[in-house]
Length: 211
Image (tube, rainbow, N blue to C red; front, side, top):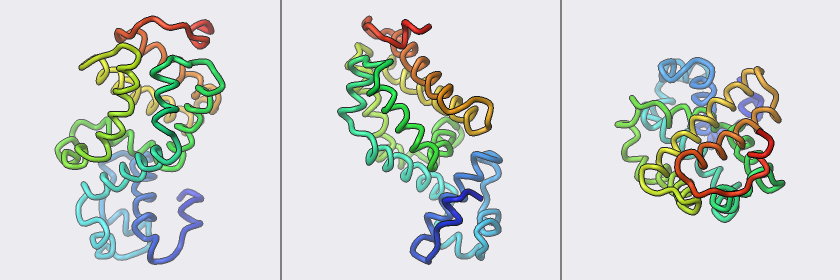
């Protein structure tokens, strides 16, 4: 169990504890391992209490994703994202800060949210949710890509590819295969290449010069 779970206590934080436990379980054992009985065992509570807070698996999925995307909104402004992605400020101090913040949010509980987002079989269960918070997150990325010259399906494809890149790089980092700095640089370079190669207008980039 992660340190952040050990530091939480109190009945008012029970649902957040369950969300964090579910996030850790998804990352360590996969989506199929997520069961109410397993959550109850790890949380040290009854299965009935788990059902009280999250009656369905889809409630758990939504809760994990909501916490992640709300934290992104809190930590990273739309203007900051537009500056990095939309204006092509790759390889700069601002770019380093932006991707660093993304990783910090993912370190808290975000990797599970990205795993869920990239699991096609969950799309039906997340359909209602997708029209709310997830769509706000997607709009931020798509608007930034449009500022780079991407339109329609090209912007959506770039967003999907960037999500996959971030998920894979962070997974390698969390598994100890690469250090944090290497993972961050790989994410930044890959996102830049994805934006450019999906049809965006040409822009100068310090990151590209490093290739």
